[in-house]
Image (cartoon, rainbow, N blue to C red; front, top):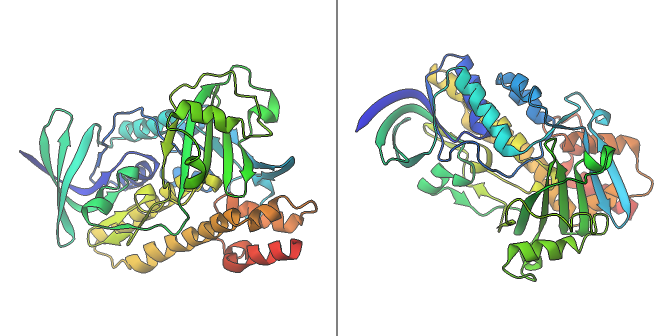
Length: 406
């Protein structure tokens, strides 16, 4: 069995792992990325938010993404019972990027991986981590490729960016019950040959069917569009097991988009995911850090998934590098506490969305421009800016404003 040693082993070649790899490669660190799938491969999480752009830029990955021609995302639109509320990222509170992208993740993730490979990062595709043993802050991992060849990897640190694979969470028994209500999702793609011009064919939109159930429409620059529903598990239980029939029936529940997609065939049979929120008991340990969806996934309503993936991937890489350089790192304060502050803000917004308070603010007929700017900054992913009252006071301010409106 072949044995080798690296400074840092990264599990997963999604956005979180690629941001970690991009940053560490710039620092001259010996790294190896192990990815279970072959690329390009489909992934959900197709709507980004502006905070991602800071992280891609720092990891040296922004330019190839800019050259790819993805559909630019300047904001988001929310629709309910004929009322429409648009948020423009250029009209947000504070500094930060004013735009980002809507992306087919297969192509997007592949560009990130290829750029890292071009810069010398080794990525082993179709290779699975089968076991991990820690010896102090060092680790020995066994990996197996598609031909069954096994290697042993000694690493000074592991960054687990395995997404829904949740490698270390499963192996170390770190799975936890999420703090967000049990929701399911179902989604597919269409080739939208009769897409409207302008905003109707470019802007990501969320149509609210009822307080806890909503539909997404995400148009891509390649002519395809992503369609999906999110709702409580009991709402999904009303439908049958044939996901294609189910999806057409659900489309019949929309009002704004009623009949627009009825004549399209799905590019793949709609996929249903149950209990989409995920959590872990801890985000780090002796010799490892868990990032992205491997650590925490809230809910797709505000497109926060890739933002937290890249934020945690970049931060884990910086702290791991310091630790390898024999600096003292307080992982609880510098990693867990920092990430949990951002997660707590978005968690409040998700909860207040599903209890109706945030929807009451969104669809109020006489919105306050300053409140809209402050909320827009949160939607853009700047959830660590505590000069923003809708960040600093997130636990109570949404309910207070909703009660004033009511």
